[in-house]
Image 1 (cartoon, one colour):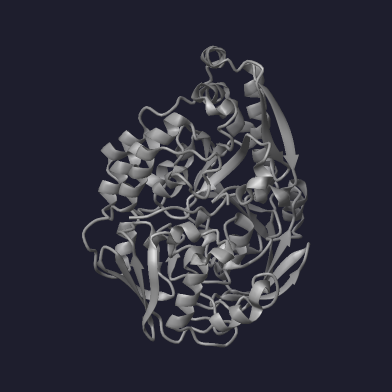
Image 2 (cartoon, helix red, strand yellow; image 1 turned 90 degrees about the vertical axis):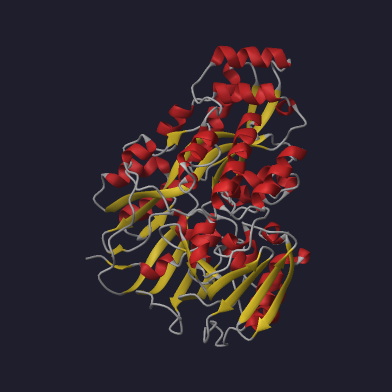
Length: 553
């Protein structure tokens, strides 16, 4: 949502400037500075977990397969699809104007072409003959309606911030939609490959009203349609034979809600479920050695952080935040909390998000970041200087997985070693998501573990979260110069120039420890011996990955 986070919020952010860019969708890969993930391997993370570019292609079709998810989605309405469970399912049911690929590049989706005739205009030419699950044919009116739902304040859309520069979405032809912007926006066209760009049938959504996303047909265009939702147990999808693209290899998919990490692991080992993403880190070794299937790791564009949610108390003093950062045993957490899959970092963004810019820019972004080594003497000195000895702080924890619970415990241990009094507040897995959406849920909480994944391959995706009023700016941080930097970067269509500005934002946010960065974390995937074909990268959040899953050779 955790664009989120793990809960991972899908993220929400600001926008853009530069000379007019024309051309087709192919331009978007350049616009996004989207070189894809590094080829990687064990050295990418300094751990024994090699990154895989993918899984073997399926050898044929199957009747069905089952998939484990760690929580039941509260809704499948695309306007609030910000977290892992929602997007893991919805990416196979609903399609967007653009599409993220397994290689983390952007390609045409429901739009066959996107052009940028001037810096504040984006024109989307739509594919003809695309059918919704309700039998209707997609038109420009459906696209306008779907995008306007994201902008409607009554919907409380999680993606509304992506549209903050949009002044108008209009039908400019039977199969053409034009988006007008207040100012140039380098981020908006990239987000059209996420749930922000989803298109659903206007007639079906209006008919469902407030119930849309919780019961009945979602009326999207993906390779699967919603067949049944057994509340508290599972969601079933069935293959949509009217799909515009390649026919899905499995006739049906069943997503089972398994909130207990041990239950998820046992279900994978026994064959009760065939696969899953976000494998419990404590189960990596068991699954590797089980012979039941294969554990994969792929590029996740994800960083594990300690989110600061209260700057009015002791954490309002930068010295206290710096002290906690210096006392935190990142390497120990990677080993225990992430199953040694990942690497300690002082960066809020992953190195893969910087794959496009030149080496000099990457160096500027990562040089001088807060140290990752433990320095208790310096940390204690800072606490004393701040007059914070004995100060009480509360960190949220949850049984979602040991990555969350052990990080909260590591923060508590770090605080204890330097003279702080840190209390743990346990929150149920299904309620943990509320920390990202409900200010009331964060009352009395100073920090919580937050795994953030980029929704686009652009480091500004994360760093824009600290702009004044941003959706994930939980602590209410405000700095005029930082806001101006976000605006300049957003307005810069040229990837190289934008990266130069964003490098400065990275140093600012890291230096102020607006979140305390802890580790880079790859995507984890387990497949048993009967299935294959799922992508290993974080692309599964917005790419119809289930359609590629079929019989193992």
